[in-house]
Structures are given as structure tokens and as C-alpha cells.
Image (cartoon, rainbow, N blue to C red; front, top):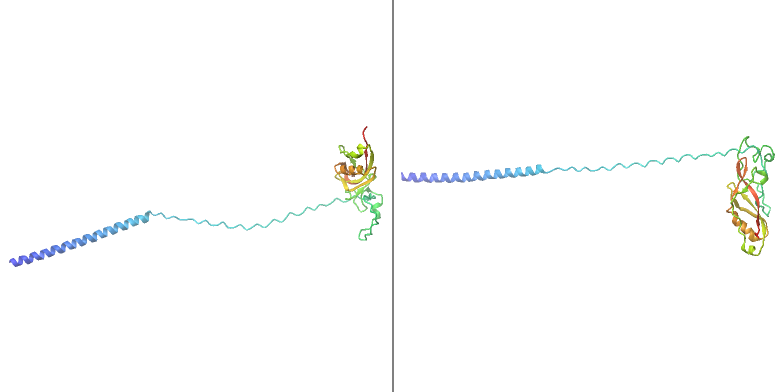
Length: 237
């Protein structure tokens, strides 16, 4: 009986030890499961708290195709009014060549009908009745224009050469030139017809470029006119 009790006691002790080990194992498993669950929850919260940012990529604006250049506006065609029906007059010889010029056969032959003396002075035979245009680049004599060219008021006088003035020398100069439609003297046509002294001639030429004139007119139109203008150098005593 005593032996049975000892054996029974030993069995009970073994069972108690196994129970303790099992309990410890279960406790460890439970702890591990709780930790894993908690860790997963933290990571889940971290993922849920992360914000997702969407970056919008700006699209490049499509390049505008160069617009075709606008065609230039059509040039205005200026139609000159027809010359009046009439006759031509002889032009003043502005420059007289010393040598006889060569005959140019390419130039048109002078139309005798343009010198009939009928119609408007300054016109042409093939002109239009009532036309008012004046043939351009024509130079007229004083007797050929309706209103001759005149020197404007307030023009400067030629400077008296000091050498001649101190010597008491007086004199005159007769100058010839063309007065343009603008009222200016065409210096390319300037010519001394007569002069008492070259210094007087130089003084006239120097002042002429700054002088103003009222241009000649034909039918209300300004024209070129050949002018002969005297200049007098006199000492006031």
C-alpha cells in the first residue's frame, strides 16, 4: 500500500509539471499573437495616416503655328491727269553746249501739231479738252507763263566784299538761274551773264541758295521758270 501511494504521488507530480509547461507555452503563444496583432495594427495605422500626393504634370501648350504673312496691300496706282489740248512753246535753253551735240536717232520726232498755237498754252495736240495738267520738267520763259516768278520779301542781300568795299569799288551782277516749283533756285542752272568783279559774282552765288521765290504759274499750277536777276553793289555815302 505504501508503494502504491509513492507511485501515485510521482505520477501526480509529473502531471503537474506537464501542466505548468503547457501553460507557459500557451501563455507565450498568446503573448506572441497579441504582439503580432498590435504590431500589425500600428503598421496599418501608419499606412492609413500616410497621405498620397498626386503631382499634376503640366502639359506644354501646343506651339502656335506661325501665321502666314499677310500679303502687302496693293500699291495705289496714281493716274496723272491728262494734259490739256493745246500747243507747246519753245523752252528756254538753260545750258548751252559749246560743242554741237550728236544726233540721237532714238528720240521721237517733234510733232508739228504740238506747235499749232491752238488751244491751251503748255498743252499738246493729243491732250484732252479741259485738261489741267502741265507737262512736267518744262522750263518756261517769263513771257510764257501767266504769273512770273518773283523774289519773296525778306530775302538776305549779298555780302559786300570787304576788299572792294574798303576800296570804294561798286558794281553790278546779272545772274541767270531757274526757279523751281518749290520756290528755290536751281543752283545747277546758275550762270553769271555779266559781272563787274568776280568777288561780286561769288557773293551772289553764296546768297542765292538761301533766297526764296514765288514760283511761276500756268493755269494755277506751279512751273519752272528761267529767271534773270540783277544784283547791285553800292556803297551808301
